[in-house]
Amino acid sequence: MNLNATQRHSLTWLAIGAVALAAIWLLAPVLTPFLIGAVLAYVLHPAVERLVAVRVPRLLAVSVVELTAIIVLLAVLLLIVPIISKELPLLREQIPLLADKLNTGLAPWLAQYGINVALDTASIKAFVLKYMDANLEEWLATVLSSARIGGSILLAIIGNAFLVPVVLFYLLMDWPNLARRVREMLPPRRREQVEGFVDECDTMLGQYLRGQLLVMLIMATFYSVGLALFGFDLAVPVGVFTGLAMFIPYVGFGIGLVLALLAGVLQFASLYGVLAVAVVFGIGQLAESLVLTPRLVGERIGLNPLMVIFALLAFGHLFGFIGVLIALPVSALLVVAVRRIRAVYLESQLYKG
Image (cartoon, rainbow, N blue to C red; front, side, top):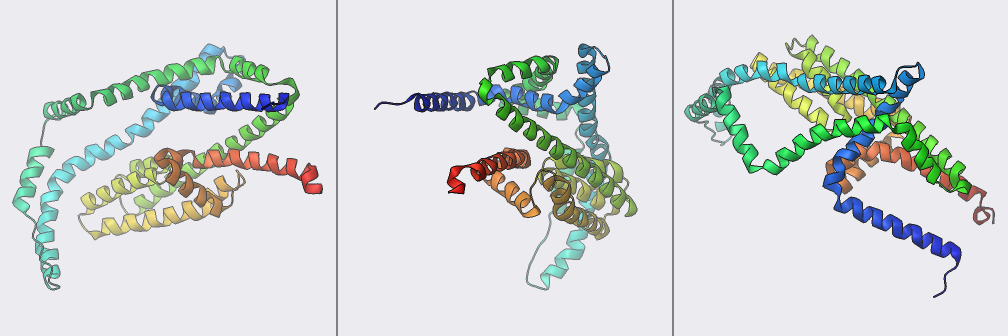
């Protein structure tokens, strides 16, 4: 079969693309820290460029931006420390009392409907005393024992924790040169078209990130104020953590909900805490899902509320947890691609007949 130059050119690029996809699939575990570093570099490089523009040495600018990002990340993670440190002692004290209350209050009520439930309070108390009164040495021994079982996973996590900042540093240092080299690889006759597409994608992703950040800040404030109005001692840590963790759709909200329920049950030892959490988080979830995300994120990337929900469900079904994370950014890029394809189609002879 004889192929013309255009067909041979297309087949060559298809072969290169297939090899690249196969390499990515085979090297996925190795590429993970580099991919994370590249995403973080894309997000942080505008801050570096602004500092460089005001004559800050690039090395200092990169160091300041990366250090600030690490501090912010650690601060968000450390928000959970006061929650755990306050709730664990309460949990140790309240679990036996809650078991007794369930036996004396709930069990007789269920017995009226033929449901016989009796909690073994003695076993529950023994379990709590055994595992929640353990000292630091015993907890450390348990962690190390688990680490021996899953040693490779632990090593991979530790390795990535050190490798990602290194990758991020070098990418931020060399970002202008990398962008220039990629641009030089583009065919001259296609360069303007590709650069226009990339610039539009960059604008779209920037709008998505700003919209998502605004949603996170609004929800962090809402949850903190809402829980504080109901008298929660841990209103600010739980509220801020829940709001900031919402960059992971559903998962961040779920973790915050569990922490808030624990705080409510342990502080008030009654249904008041559960009802308070239900009211605050119910209103918050409705506002975030039906108003904030569709308006502040969906509209900025050209997706209506129905398409935002469909994108989250579709990517989650296809790619699991990672799919939920990338659903809206990838959808933003697809919107740009569809706009370009539509514009080309409307100008083509196929459309004009």
